[in-house]
Image (cartoon, rainbow over all chains, first blue to last red; front, top):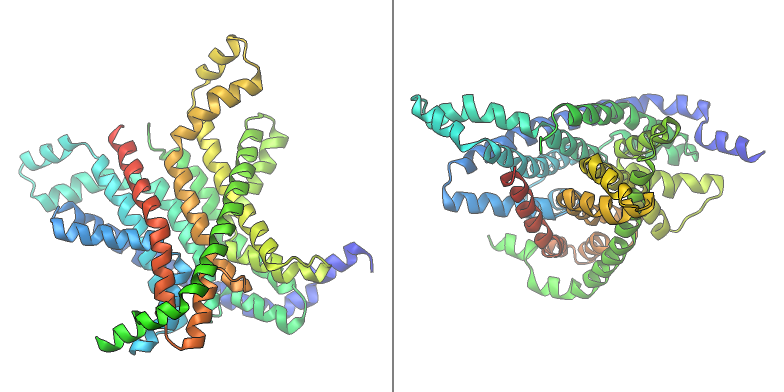
Length: 226
Length: 223
């Protein structure tokens, strides 16, 4: 076998790929479900925390800042391992899917809270004052005046952060969730051939390239004006 | 409450596991000291090359950057560590980790430096060139210092991400901090070592996180 033949046989083996396509396709669906769940809960929780923080209740804000700092400083894989391998010792058992979902949602919530909060701060003070002086309540000013402007400012950093954290769904393979990577590794060890890994890599590119390209577009379109 | 303390904050077990974890921490630090500078250098290279406005240069760079930004780092690591041996390239765990994370980090650093260089107005280049500086001198003394200052928060942020990224090396059994903690957990059948490892990461990175949040807020306030 020439080197090229050997490469093709190892990484682009059509026969092996065909055999493991179904399990990787199932993994693909699971990765998409996990990613969507993380984005929805992470962003919702992050926005909620930023709104609570704008109420400026000192002890509450300290708690939020401490929690956010912890989640930003500890690697997501460590949090997943804590949820999945440590919590059962105190009687809290959860599936690998739930552990990954909860961990990544918390991490995304922490990062997005910072971004939303920065966006809220960036809206000019006069906007608040004008809104309040026309008779809107605090909640109304926030919902109809401040947040729409703040969210627009936060779209580029938020997109990048959401993509980065969603790629963390591959970490679910460590806690036995049969998502893309896990299906690919299983396929590789059964077939004694790394073509399933190639297939998995292609699956990730199909999933994330559109977001990365869209992120690039959004970045120029909604760029933070300096 | 007692079960919680026994399992998560067991001082006796933490003390027993501490030497192992400190060794792991050392490996984590070594990994960071290799990957972060390598990523910064490669990223700067990518950004400098993309200042050459030739389509056959910029397009491959965009493909390179987008490819490695779309690829989850763990998938890249698994591919390099478990896939390449099939074609006779058998890298040890440390080399595989360094290669995978440097490729990943260089794409992010590259994007950051590119944004930084673009944020310096073209008048700066023109002024520098007209005073007689060469193209290289202009980049080195005028453009890059301003570019780096403009994107400093992003650079710090990405470096924190690189440090956290090294925890994935545990998957290929490289004895860094998380791996050491998991080993200690399985020996003692008590998760306190993982809590201790999390605390170590927090202590290591918290100053960076605080600094970053300061810088970000200052940048917003100055707009």
